[in-house]
Length: 348
Image (tube, rainbow, N blue to C red):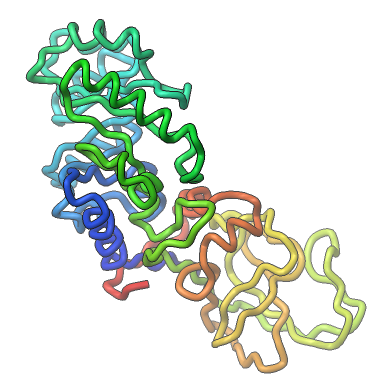
């Protein structure tokens, strides 16, 4: 059975790195999308020193409250129905407001509010000229602050980062509220953006949010799966659907019990490897729904039941993401529900 081994100590260590990088800021730990596939409840229960948590969907916030999480919980996406304002009130959820229509939805409710300013992402956010309208509509005691989001923070030298920050600072100065801009990339590479609150997300789980430099983070997820078959193969024989790989010499093939239904990317390139019994072995043929095949080196002694690492301590998740032309975020979030999460204290 495939397993995602989650190191809670690695997550806590990465959180502490965010705290150390931004010592004068409060830390809002982002645990949306089931904590990027790691288990939001387990992660939030471990991060007892977080000043707040953030999620993207109302049901994610409710699940945390029902699990006993007491810290403030911020709903990034806000609400789009009046009934959601009632649920947010009942479960003491803070809202991010980014659209004028949301002001009507929260009337009559004593909800705490973050305003989201569009500084250049042009996704969610209020235009700078409209901020006074929102500020005047929300009681001062309920206005938590003003936040925005970088569009290019993974490229620290991108000039747009400084432009976006300047816009937030300029608008923030006129209303005098706490400010929040820095995501994981901003925390690690742009100290001027730390401000009153930082919002670490992907860095909590040990993946590098930057495109142009390495960072010292501890991988929190180790995806493993067992060898379910070992087969001898002759020259000229092919492996898998479409017969895309042909053996050029006699050898052995190991079949690993994990496929794209478990979240492993079907789009990987030639040369992608797994770690098995001390050796990196190359994946051959197409990824199937429930399994994949690897070509064993001559030194490989694997037998039925031996566990291969698909990513984690030996195979960086960023390397698999690169081979699949995607992001580590995507891989983490796509680990399916049929892959059990096993929580450990072992650091990645």
